[in-house]
Image (cartoon, rainbow, N blue to C red; front, side, top):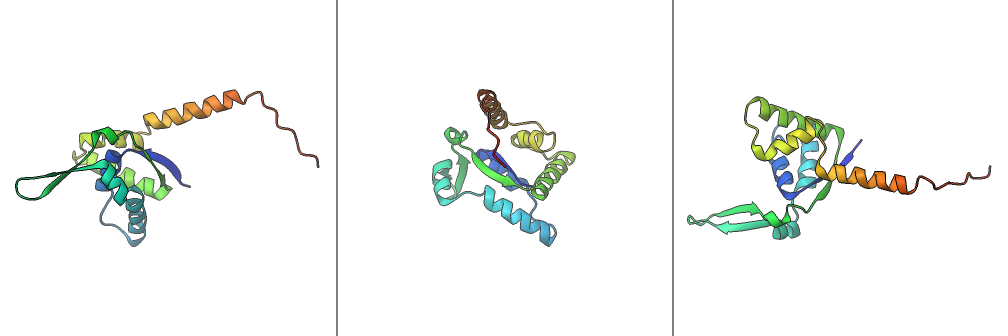
Length: 141
């Protein structure tokens, strides 16, 4: 079963850096699908990424801080979630988990809900309360 989760551009980049580059053929197919779902289109790259030239002629890319509130829905299947959890746990156990990944660790490994998840749940609860007195007629048999 797949769950749709929302990720900002920085979270997407962090997840792309966390998911494994090696594995079995079947898990790598799932990783490839995950990379495609998390990756950036040409339009998103133009919108979210700031490129800065460096003195040596190369470029440094960073996420535009003003665009961190833009979220993308990504379908995460059960096995993809397991792959992400295992990768985050492994980084933590090796003491290589970066502070920028802590929110993802809390979300995937510890099961904490993101602010967006909480907003979605609050909106769903509000709709349920608003429609609590609505009676749906039964269909005649």
